[in-house]
Structure formats: C-alpha cells, structure tokens
Length: 179
Image: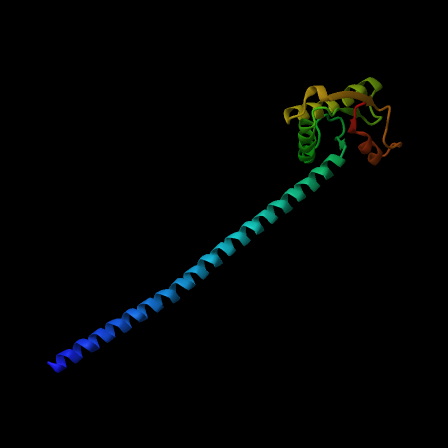
C-alpha cells in the first residue's frame, strides 16, 4: 500500500512538473509569435514606404519629362511634307494634355517653309503643317478654341541661307502663346 501511495505521489509530482513545463513553454512560444508579428508589420510598413517613395520618384520624373516636352516648341518637317515627325508624337501629346488641363490657355501654331517653291505654295504648305499639328493636338485632348493657326510660308526664316541645314531649320511649326 505504501508503494502505491508513493507511486501516486510521484505521478502527481510528474503531472504538476509537466504542466509547469508546458505553461512556461507556452509563454516562450508566444513571445516569438509576437516578435514575428511585429517584424512582419515592420516589414510591411517598410515595403509600403519604399513603394510610396518609388511612386513619388516616378511622378517627379514624369513631371520633369513633361516640362522638358513643354519647353520643346519647334517641330521640324521633311522637304515638301506636311506631316510632323513620328518622334514628335510624345512631345505633342504632352502639349495636348497640358492644353486640356488648362482650358484658358491659348496657343498659336505658326507654319513655315523653306524658300524653295513659290510664295503661294509655301504659304499653303506652312498652313498644312500648322493644321497637322492642330489636328493632332485636338485628337489628344486640346480644344479647337485654344488653337489658332497661321502660315508665314518662307517669309520668316529661322536661318538665312541656301544650305540643306538652313532649309531644314526653316521647315517648321512653332507653338507660341496666343495673345
């Protein structure tokens, strides 16, 4: 009987020790979970900040590029052609969007030609050039009421001379503020 009593006491002691061990293990296991939760939250917050910074850098870069595009106000044409260069499309889209977001802004599109051809032909060519840019701006958001066109033909050359370089610089449309 005494053996049985000792056995019960030992079993009771082991059970209490086991429960004590489990409860302390439980506390130490919860702390790493809390630390993991905190670390995950910190990582998520850092990722969100990094994403916000990336978006801000992209926005600033777009604004810089848009401003550079708006500073480009002269568009050149090939000989005897009224269509602008495909490389000018993006720049002209920025101009159109700028006009669309500033409805009170007005611009004058001044068409020019080099001196080859008759005066009448060059006036008509300058007008077709100005109209091609006007139409593109309208399709991309500008209002017709914001745009006026004028052709100077060969009358206002950017460069005087009879070289290919001078001719090329004179075949142009200039975007100017309208007054």
